[in-house]
Amino acid sequence: MSPSKKKSGKKERVFPHRHCSICFKMIPEFSDGYCSYECRNYKKMRKKVRYKKILKYILSYGVIIVLVLVLFLAFM
Image (cartoon, rainbow, N blue to C red; front, side):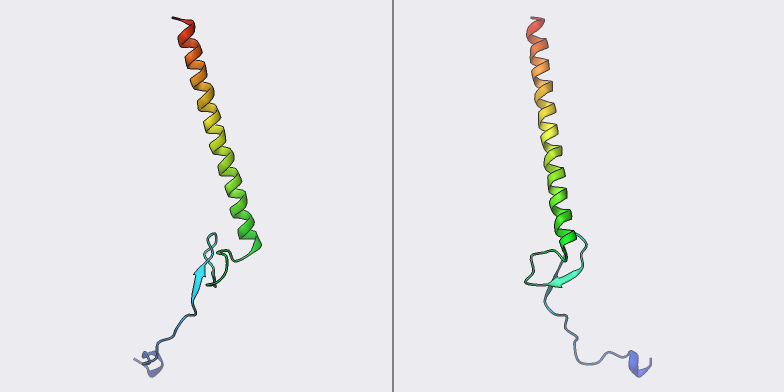
C-alpha cells in the first residue's frame, strides 16, 4: 500500500448540514430544508395536487353513498 493511500490520524469533518427534502443535495443546517426555489415550488405544487386528489376521492365516495341510499330507498 502506498503512503498516500494510508489513513492519517486526523479525521476529516464535514460541516453540519442537512439535505434538501426534494433532491437530497447538501445544504447548510440553518436553512429551511430546500436547496432552491425550484425545489420549494415543486413541494408546493405536489401539495396542491395531493389536496385536489384527496378532495376528488372524498366527493366521489359521497356521491356513491348518496346514489346507493337513493336506490336502496327507491326499491323498498
